[in-house]
Image 1 (cartoon, rainbow, N blue to C red):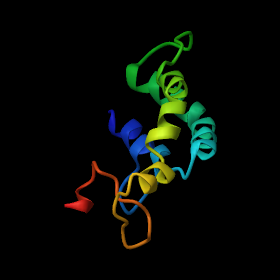
Image 2 (cartoon, rainbow, N blue to C red):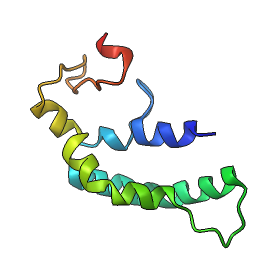
Image 3 (tube, one colour):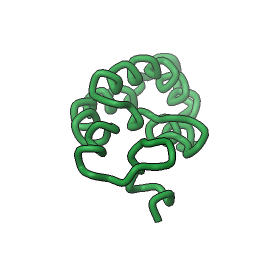
Image 4 (cartoon, rainbow, N blue to C red):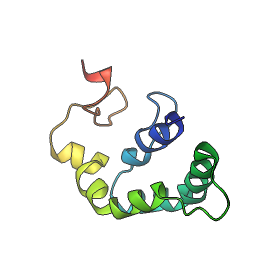
Length: 99
């Protein structure tokens, strides 16, 4: 059930980019805004809550937006000197691609 959320945040290698695949803080904000309704709808569905339920996950990500933008974006990964993949993008340290 968590796979949907993990895939949207971290992406699916070779298939779909995630929020942390954003180039910079501005793009993180855009990606979060575009996914907010989808996150909220899926959270209500997965947790089987009523329409009165206030979803928390998109709010949590919004609260962490600055940290994501400063520490996890492609721009930051380049500055950190992470190696690049075949497409010139920094390899995420939590994927098997760099092994």
